[in-house]
Length: 215
Length: 212
View 1 (tube, rainbow over the protein chains, first blue to last red):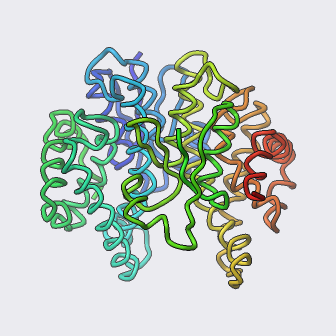
View 2 (cartoon, rainbow over the protein chains, first blue to last red; view 1 turned 135 degrees about the vertical axis):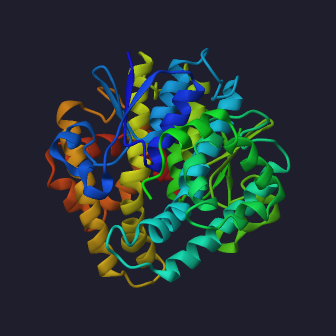
């Protein structure tokens, strides 16, 4: 069964795409134009009642929430492709720890930057420079903690690449690209080495090549 | 094993509810947040973000309440309440989905409401009614989705109480004691669900810790 992934142009669905490629799982991308509000269509809301991307459809089996989807496929195909959850329950604990850090400490600030810098004019509201400044400062403090962590281990959960790293790819790509704040990564030695490592993975390069950003 | 936190912190309460459900003995280390202990060098070595809770078991150090509960539920599957669905990977994924819904849809507006309606009055600060209105509207939309879901199954991930429900306990508790209670009361399935989960003995034990 080929897995359908809705909304490939956008950042959160890319978490799923890069995971499926790492796990060598066949999929089909279903484009959706969020800027036209296609994610609020009644048909789509039947799949995802909150009206957000991504959604995956595997036969009758529908899932949403990118970090739930990547956990599912990483577990279901544990012995296929790249191991993304660690080998032991203790390693898995660290993967969960840093996935939560990504979701609750890293993502809110980088998401605000993305919304304000990249999408505000498209979505018809004006950039709020205070929000941008504040988000940048807070993200900087989070990255300082990453710098410390990555001086001790090559990846966030330990010396192995995992979902915890993978989950950072889409929005960090915006940060060094369209958002224009590459310095936040390059000025931190270990964060920079980590970013160069994870963003040069063939899986991520393939996602970027196949599904360009909407802007 | 050690849990560092504060009985007044909702994230600490989330982790503690899990320990009680799993019937696991732990040593609780009170972090005096009023005195800034969560920003001390000692504590930062447990959690570099300077937030509670933090968890230690031998060499394993974890933070982030939802990562701690996931680890405990998985490592101690044979103890206490089964908080993960033991069936197929598909049912497990539905559980993960509802955990993410809690973290990304329920938690943001409910946390802001708890801050405005509980913590601010507690510390003698004025509640911002505009913030309350905005977040009540946001939470109402989320609870509409919950109402539809809970019409189909008793709990969020299926017919069994799981981590997906447990993670709601702290914020649901404070909201049920505030003017935001109406958002739950007006939705019959949500109302029955929240009454059910708040009546769990594990939750009473968490509340008891505040009295100590």
